[in-house]
Amino acid sequence: MHTKSLDIKTRILGGDSHLDVTKPYNNVAIIYEAQGKYGEALEMHMKSLDIKTRILGGDNHPDVAASHVNHDWCFSTLVLGAFLAGVFQHQCITPH
Image (cartoon, rainbow, N blue to C red; front, side):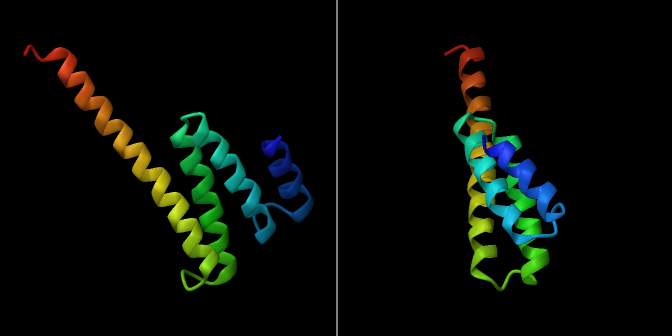
């Protein structure tokens, strides 16, 4: 449903040149996060952040700051998950 909304908005508004497409990108990212697809979620957050940064003129806007938080949270979760997977794998392989 949210991916369809993203497709429609980007088509109607002319691609990634309109601020209104950032919300559907964020919504799709949230769905990917809930599914544990952090790589895909990160990509969606990055698109939203890039659009906001370009249109709003850099990092001096509250909406850009919010996108940084979303992106950074997702990135941290991805890195932590990879780290914990490595620790778990090490614990399972290493004799105690």
